[in-house]
Length: 502
Image (cartoon, rainbow, N blue to C red; front, side, top):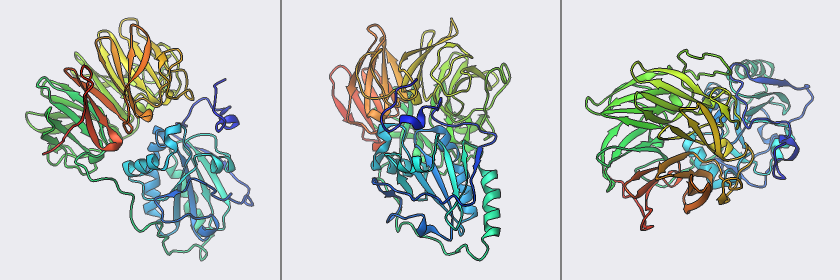
């Protein structure tokens, strides 16, 4: 039995995973026609809206409640479906996000506002930090959506991904059933969008360093890749900053929230995360091509598709080892391996289930792997939903947890790895027997000493740092939600915000 905080108590006792990822067909719960939709009660406020609303205020509209938590990859996966429905039924449908946070750090309005900006969410979002709405609707997993008829009754609830077809059919039927009752006038929830401070960078994420000491950065929120000198000057831009999927030269190519990057000679490999593709940028010819993936999210479990090419699913981090590219496949909770000689991608580690289990490669379970770092015969993995650090031994073919205990065991505690706690760590780098960890939701960089098996805080006062890398003794940090890079000298302890400029 996992240990839960008071707020989690019985609603998580039966849960073995934090997010539902039954992708091919969402699980549907149908309701009696007399089931009145509970009110949206919250003491934490409405975001992306100028005021709060009740279910009664929305009578005459079809209402879709999206129960989500922003760090959950499965919740992110259904966002395109929600956007499609939002546009398709702009006059009849109202979508309300119900943000019922898993992690403590996800409960603040400022953090949720950043997620709204990062994901381009247009509809209102309710901060359900104390799970009042979650419990009223008897939700048990992320993501879950509840469909409410124009007369305020629950029609159905769906868990997991693959929701579009079912919802599209049900909404179409509701439009017919309530013809003449549904109001066509749009509801204006806010006069202006959430906004962030102006900055050259927007949600910077993964980094790598070349032999000249320049940093290559996935400027994820701007859908581009940058080459930056040690003094912060941008000397190369890859991508048009237009969200999309377009190959071509560096000025016209399009990405969708790129994350992981890895450099081999003049070739830059890019995890084009929301496009579910691996892209290749040739820094000599200045051309971008797609080398793996076709946009579909690949899901593979157990012995399915072993030794056969597979599709990436929200690839989040990359690491090169000779002629292999390792891919942290966050969407399917696995590590993939690409053969650089032919660009074919294969399953490498992970059974596909979201769980913190060790053992042989294909028996082990990962929890949304999002960071990779290789040293010798070991690949280290930042495994955020389990707030864990894992290692893959390339010789013994075994996966082992070296920090972290479970999907709901998280916090901010230094000390021996047996008792230390991280919170949704997403990036890491190794130097001289020490792992430097982007402890994302704690806003810190922590150091795991592999010899003493202890964890200690090195840098604090950051805002969801996503990655770290080294240039000599200087640790570069992508201070993601502050839209900046930070340099920290591990010898002098000097800290400075990088002046990124054109």
